[in-house]
Each structure stands twice: as C-alpha cells, then as structure tokens.
Length: 114
Image (cartoon, rainbow, N blue to C red; front, side, top):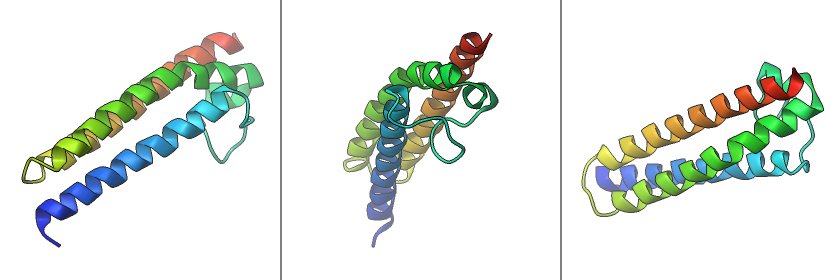
C-alpha cells in the first residue's frame, strides 16, 4: 500500500471514529444510554447526576456533529491531495471537535448540577 493510500485509509478511519463518538453522544443526549462508567462523556460533572449526564451530552451534540462534517470533508479531500497533510488535518479536526464537545459538556453539566 502506498503512503498516500495509507493516509487516505487512516483519514477514513478517523472519520468513522468520529461518527461512532457522535452517535454515542446523540444516544446519551436522548436518554437511550444512561449514566455509566463505560461509554459517553465520562467527566466528573456528567457522572455526578442524571441531569448533568443529559445536559452535558445535549450540549456536546452540536460540536460533535460539526466535527463529523469537518473530519469527513477532510477525509474526502485526502483522496485528491497527496501526502500526509489531509490525514493530519483529520486528526487535528477530530481532536479539536472532541475537545470542544467535552468543554461544552463540562459547562452544561456543571450548570445543571448546581
């Protein structure tokens, strides 16, 4: 497999991971996944109360879906741009989206539990 093909595959793997994280976030926000220690945004404010769990995940839904769109777009661009740049863009967008989602969840859950 060429380096470009490997970077493309890795970019799509990152996009798939972002979709999985976002689906879990959406399910937790809808109440289909209850507060637990295994899946979801497991930070102190979301684990403290059921209200914090729901508020945190609801706040994280929009940043998560925004991240899916951005990472998927970068993965598509990876098909046409040679080199590791698009893969790095996917990785950076993934980390940035997850960070924004967790910060949103932390703030929402913190305000819900106070």
